[in-house]
Amino acid sequence: MAEIAEGGSGGGHKGGKKRAKKQSTRIDMTPMVDLAFLLLTFFVLTSTFSKPKSMELTFPVEPPPGSPPPPAVKNGITMLLTKDDRIFYYEGEFRPKDDEKGPKTKLAELNFAPSSLHKYLADKNKWAQDEIQKLNDRLKKKEIPDTTHKRLVKEIKANKIAPTILIKTDDQATYKNVVDVIDELNINLVGKYVVVDILKPEYDLIQENLKGVQP
Image (cartoon, rainbow, N blue to C red; front, side, top):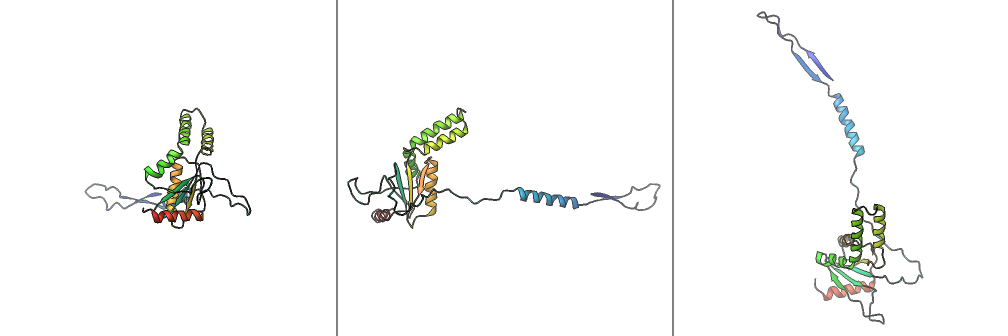
């Protein structure tokens, strides 16, 4: 609290004039310090500290011993990530050699340029993107509620005709490349993707391409 201290008159009457008394002000800062600590405590208790960023990844359940081989994935696209930011891929079922179902699998290659991986996924998932855009327009016009919009978008992404992406990496691929591929999948509204272990024949085929094709 503020206090006013009165000083002396500085002398008696001189020349018939009376001097005004000098006054000094002293401010007590104790309440201010208390208030500062209260505010500091309030902000510490109510502040949100930075949270670690995480990414949701889907891993398939390990089948029990003796189980039959899983059926082929419909509209499946397998992406094989390796060193030097290279992405090999093939569509459909993997065949290590020519058989009655078709010729040996051959790998094609993509990269992280907008005209490569992004365009490829956009073309493959164009049907889902068009359908989701229609739903977005209906939501904007308030023709459907938000809950219905979310449910229908989820159904479109899970549709059988939508592509399913299998992401596999060898021991030379980087974590950053996996994250970049998943980012592109989300940007292009691909709802079905999974990270799985690479097969030995797939790894061998990657090595053949790395030896035969220069980056």
